[in-house]
Length: 97
Image: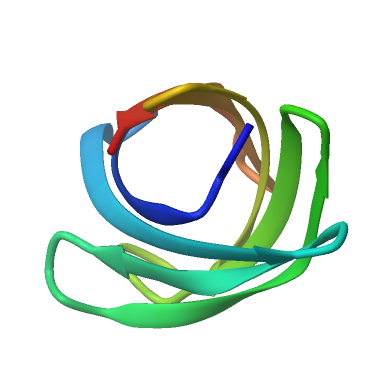
């Protein structure tokens, strides 16, 4: 199961739907990449892990407010889905390549 590639994400946040692009690259069990918000703000992901089809990573965003987002996901072919957790709550996200 490859998490590598560019994913179009949709997050159902308390502020409504937010879209982002996630570029992932795996090496062994490590996951690196970049999360780019719909406004064009990009940030590197960190603490990325990949085990089988289970993936997790964190990203520090600035918009709409400064937050650390913690993602847990399951990769299924060209689809990805999971949960985003932040100090203000958690919400589901989905995506595709």
